[in-house]
Image 1 (tube, helix red, strand yellow):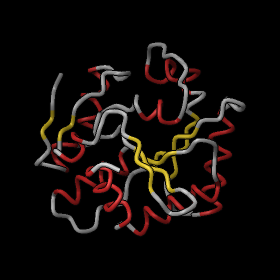
Image 2 (cartoon, one colour; image 1 turned 45 degrees about the vertical axis):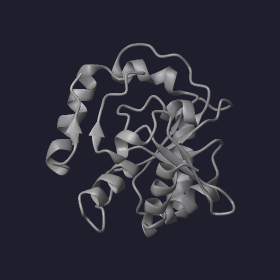
Image 3 (tube, helix red, strand yellow; image 1 turned 90 degrees about the horizontal axis):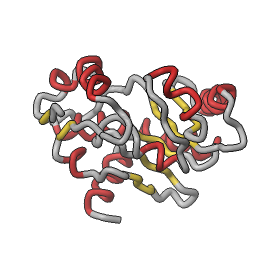
Length: 190
């Protein structure tokens, strides 16, 4: 584990509610699962802004990869199993094996099929949110950061060019109120 991986793991472990969420996902155990995105960005950036207890996230992104079930019902089935295991968490489960089937309808443009949950994480909109973790059976955290962790810990918001358009990135900056919520963040406008 690199220094930044260990730093992220320590921050995740310091959050009781996030650890409870990770344990719930581990118990449900959808195939090839990872939790990440905004939930990790918020945790890190809130702490780097001196907030001892980060606010609760709008949702908890769960990426999983199940090529045997590409229907939307699979996402709902996993979310319901998570709610049954740990209610009160705003779960957002997405089967990364099915993203290519709906992405264009929702965001425009066509995308190629993904190969794994980690491949999906690598397409998430900003480099600082293209980060996820998995809690294994021995309570070890595995960090997946296809774009690296440097931007996350350097407080840099940068568009991940792998999939998201410039317009979508700019809309996310406004909707998520990045500059307002985290004034120390450097926003890179493409």
